[in-house]
Amino acid sequence: MEGFRNFLLRGNVIELAVGVVIGGAFGAIVDGFIKALIDPLLLLILSATGAGSLETAMLGIFPIGILISAIIRFILVALVVYLFIVRPFSAAAAKTAAQAAPAATPADVVLLTEIRDLLKK
Image (cartoon, rainbow, N blue to C red):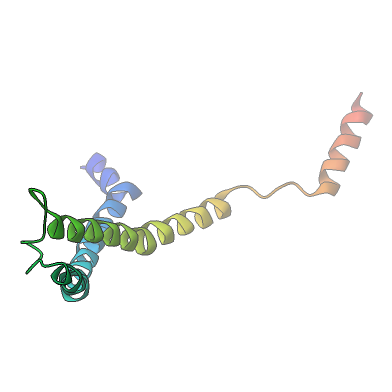
């Protein structure tokens, strides 16, 4: 049981769980944004070229409207995850590492140590 507890309390598992939950929540927000704003905008642009809907907008045999929507959705989800999860956690980890790092030895202590070492010789 102790090994399992240590596994859970290691930072990686908790960070992963938080990332998945928050990523899913932001994914729903981004999907709503895409469906409410981007898809209608693409539909307006594509309907000017003669396509009736995103599903019927074709480039040869490929449904280009669905592809464009999926690419925009992926980029926005990646951007949101980076801005709201990766960057803040990286900054917090860097701050924690900086606090945990030993402070640099002051110059006067270094000088006194060198003098001591020279006197020993």
